[in-house]
Image (cartoon, rainbow, N blue to C red; front, side, top):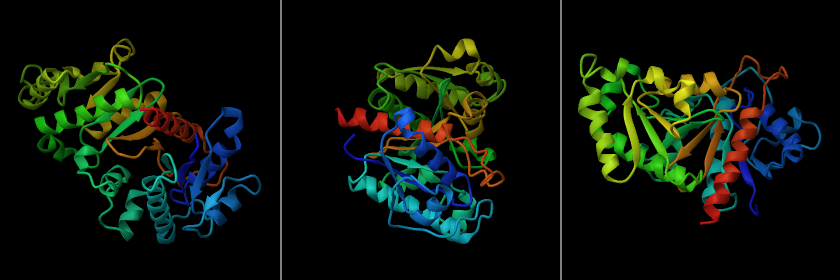
Length: 312
């Protein structure tokens, strides 16, 4: 690749700096693409004293692992904004984000919901047009609703939401992942996918009509499937992505199967963005036990998607 990837620092009190450094040290062994870090020169120099990744001028501060504070949240937020600008301007080919604390950034930026929503705003898109997919070696899955209370999920689900997001998923699997005719398996909301309305009406009134509309548009969609069997080993090989109705319905199986290699990739953006599918892990930061596997997988996936888009 002629342009480097850019990695945002994440919360400097978390494991972000460690896993960035670990990925950099293994870049030749694993044939990873070149990348730069958005700020954090002093922090990264403390984490990795020699042969560290190049850090661009930007937000920086003291390295205090396991001690999150407002200064660290500001560094994380500013690094995220800098990295986004670098990709939008064309200086970098793709963006990988290290983990941030949504709650801590929200203390300094009350409008911050999460990184997926941040990228929708940064690219001038409606939040519905920015889709979070979790991808690992065993499973790809997408939640229809994300950062909201579970009690709000039924009211947020609409035919239009499911159709719009599944269109984006189908197109992204074709363009970004090279899957010619992706099979999208859509889960129900209720136990047993509602069991013909005896356990809820969302499958009949919302999910099934959305699937029917997608099929008329040529999307290879199936369901509603009972969520308790959709992720079983004999089922996972029958589809390319599982569509879940809420956050934990998607993330519990992904993290159970692929915790150390799961990647969060934002679909529907004009830029490429991936992230390790885990949090800041403040409790183990600085102890030398954080595994970089998901960061490495996120870097690799970002480069692969960027290359596929460049070849179009």
